[in-house]
Image 1: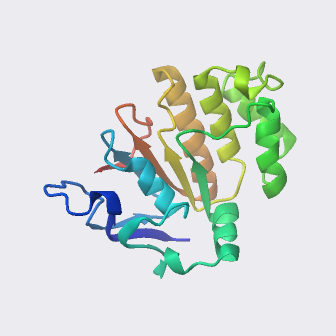
Image 2 (image 1 turned 45 degrees about the horizontal axis):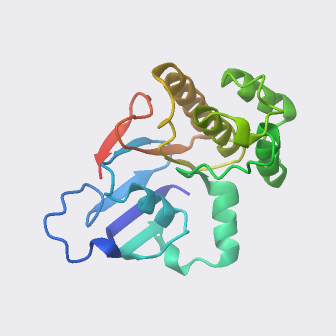
Length: 214
């Protein structure tokens, strides 16, 4: 996948609202493979909706979204499975970890589907994230910031053309923000993938990113 494009897209809940000032909604924008984007938003402007639209979870919008020129509303279930397994790695804002599983089990659950990372590679990610002593801790017993880092490790356990991150560092301090950003950029560079990261205030600290105001 080389390009994700939004064409005059607007959440239906915003229909009829005057004075929408956005560089995303009701615009024609292209998000290109290999490039980095920070989607800067205020609360209630639809950043999580945008991510859900791109990932195919929701279709309550006007206009269109395309992958390499193909309207995503036309994709079959099999095609969506392929998109989610090989083309878009997604971190939702709510992380969606299984609280009854350990941190490592949450990551392994994803990696068993993709077979993308070796055990040593996953262990190195836990070490790099400062979570070496949390591998066997239940996800429900971790702090929110620790859960966020586990969810990021899980997100990186797949091949992709784009890494789509909804508020990936909202619960992290500046040091952990830099650490997470480095690992995400490193993985994206290894795969030649684009990065699309949303934020409300606390931006993922990566150089060379195009900032787009939602």
